[in-house]
Every structure is written in C-alpha cells, then in structure tokens.
Length: 230
Image (cartoon, rainbow, N blue to C red; front, side, top):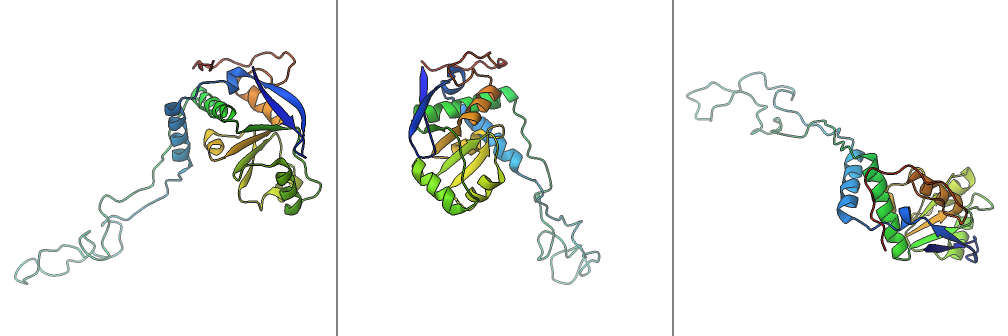
C-alpha cells in the first residue's frame, strides 16, 4: 500500500494519505515518456521560421553582364544563392511540427512520471497552500518551513491571485494546476508537492481511485493497460 505523510504549512505531519496504485504505482516506461515529452516539445514550436529563395529576394531581375566575352563566369541574376545578398537554398519555411499523441499514452506517461517520483521519495503532499499576503517574503517563509528541494513544482487545484503574486518572483519554484500538469513540467522538478485537493483532482483525471481511505468509484479505464509495480 502506498502511503504518504500529509504536512501542514509549518512542515508538521498532520495526517497520512493512501495513493492509488493505478496512478502512483505504475512501472515507469522510459521509451513511452520520451515519446510523449518529445511530442510535447515539438508541439510547443511555432514553426514560423522563414527564409527567402532566389525568387523571393528583392532585385536581381536584370542579367549582371552579357553571357560571353567578359572573362567572368556566366550569371543570370545577382540574387543567385552563390552571390552575396542572394537567396537561400533549401532554407526553412513555415511549417507545423505537431505530433499527435493518443490521450491514453499521455495519461500513461504521466502515471509513469508520478510513480517514479513516489518511488524516489520526491513526492510530497501538503494540506493546503496559502499565504497571508501577496508578498514574496511570505512565500519564501512558507517554502523554508516546508524545506523544499531547490527546484520544486507546487501543484494546486486553483491559483488565487494572492498566491500567484507571492510566488511569481521565485525563479526556482513553479505553480501548476493539477488539470494542466504535463509529464515534461513534472520532469523539470527535483520534487513534486501536491495539495490534498490537487492530489484528488489529478488522481481522478488519470483514472485512478481516490487518494483518501474512503471508497471511491474507479475512473474510466485506459485502452493501454499500465503495469502496476509490485
């Protein structure tokens, strides 16, 4: 049974929570995670790069000199790719880098990443994440009391304006919504910190059972069946 301590904002243990083995006990597949992360990074590319061919560069409509009897090599345009200020041969043109990944694969990769954090002891749960005022000083005090790793991702179910303004000037800590968390964003962290509400939300999102001790109905089954680590 996978259990994790629940801490308060002072770093004190207040409870324990049982994690769903269908989400946090999945055997990691590095090939699957690599495929999903590569597709995510490719989809982030805008593909707006563009170069001009010899036909698109301004000028060059006149033959620079006659064909014969000048001692120069034959030339038909000053915009040849061989010339300075000429066009570009086989240069990049705007295109889409989009790679389609089935939702079941994305979910399974997310489960594998979360399971690896749980296995390595870099997965923490806190009761709630609140600050008294929108000041970076208060956020730093909160993070010190929690004794977080240098690069941490805090996953919450919602981001109030006060919390966002308090955290946004801390370069090593990122706030993420549980419904938007991706495998790539999680892998950038040294430690993942979930609030109780965010933990329940991502467990439901990934089709696992509830994270508390009460009985919950299972979510929809994936077409790709994960291998639960024993």
